[in-house]
Amino acid sequence: GARIVANEVAPHRARLVEQALAAVPADAVERVQVGDGRQVGVEEPGAYDRVLVDAPCTGLGALRRRPESRWRRTPGDIATLTTLQRELLGSALDAVRPGGVVGYVTCSPHLAETQLVVKDVLAGRDDVEVLDAAAAVRQVAGDDIPLADRTDVQLWPHVHGTDAMHLTLLRRRA
Image (tube, rainbow, N blue to C red; front, side, top):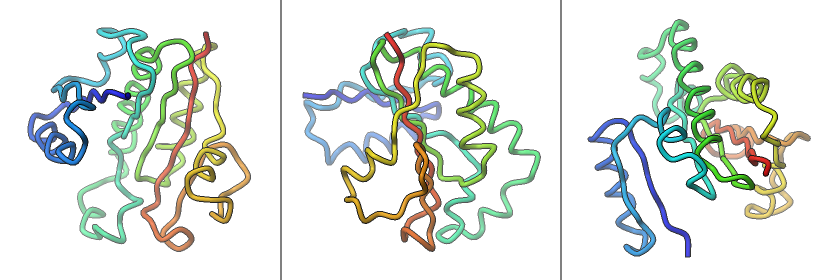
């Protein structure tokens, strides 16, 4: 019974999302929109039960698949990206209803783009709690998946056979 609303800032990326959603039953897709994700929380406060923030990042976690990407980034990109990541996460938290859940995901293992973004956003809010993402992943992947003893999840190529992806789950308190 879930309905998907996808938001992308770039029209060409929105078209890619539409193509990817072709595999999803049509009645499950409400719309794919082009807009600034930093505005969703202002434009649609409390409108969603769940929001997934697939944050633009350095992509350092995907170097095994895209080794050339190391030449597209500079250390100076971190400040710009982490500012954007914090703004997107804050907007997502405003866009979920009380009791709603936000998944914050990056394909970067860099602490500045993962744990520190979440910490910075939470420092300015008293209406959000951190959920146990590791427990959620274990529910799907099984108890045998090797995860660190913490509530967020950091996957590694050499351990999990995936890109170096990060997940934090947050619930907006009522």
